[in-house]
Length: 87
Image 1 (cartoon, one colour):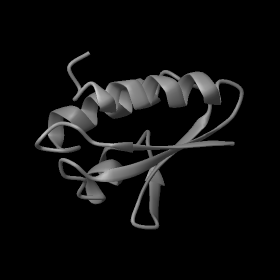
Image 2 (cartoon, rainbow, N blue to C red):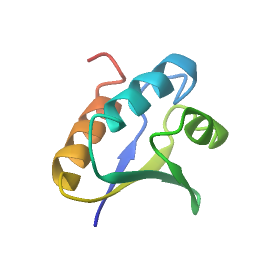
Image 3 (cartoon, rainbow, N blue to C red):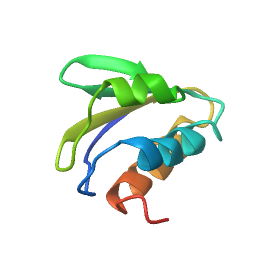
Image 4 (cartoon, rainbow, N blue to C red):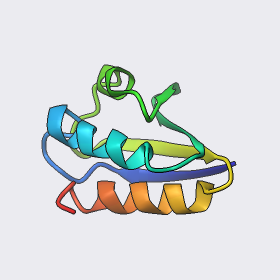
């Protein structure tokens, strides 16, 4: 299992379109992936779960992955968040 912290760079945070990009990217991997904010953890492959966290800009989140492609999944999702969802 791998865990990385990242700060959400874009102003609106993980709402609507950015959240959709995030879950689409998460669904490309076989590993189980979660997003954690303030000790609350949700499935990163669930749009409702990610939206329920209410992640706004400049919020620190944890991305957690467990599985055969966990390292690739974490790196890819951290890169997406750091880019401000412009990739």
